[in-house]
Image 1 (cartoon, rainbow, N blue to C red):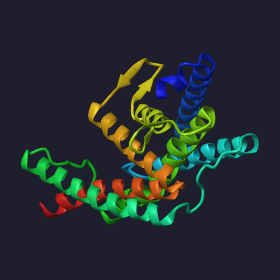
Image 2: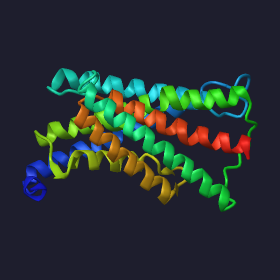
Image 3: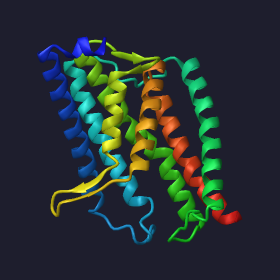
Length: 248
């Protein structure tokens, strides 16, 4: 079924152009975020550069994504999910996800401790550092990234396809493609000098989480629940690491 829809050369061309355009927008938003973030000094209140620079970066890339969505909304009839949507379904997904990720975070850190590979921090776990990093994860990580890497690409790809392209179960082609873009955003690279730094485990995690969040986005018809899922997962993973360091 998917193959039949993509065999049309014009549709394949439109898909390719849309995919490339989305990738370039995401790269531009991310790079612009760092350019703006580097205009400021954070040494007075964040000397270890843990959360302030990241916060500025995510705010800038979010504003760019919102600007692109605003422009697109004037030219295409599309719903980017900035509403409550199916709250019953969204909250059910959120609760199940939170329970699962809490167990995963706990098991992960226990295994790392048993294997002698527990997280070692190169900064003190002061109240400011802990609240600053967890605050960033809670309020900005999911909010910014879900707009740029979920709402924008999935909605644009559905518009290009003219409908959802089902693959299997509740997984759609547009969700998979958006997850590839999200995973690609976790590859550290530069042109001058030419360098590429890839963590396969991080890519797999990003792709898996992107797929789950994309499914919830489409099923709930709202970006709110993926935002909360993304932020909660980050807080649980980071916070559990802090907890193990303090207790053990």
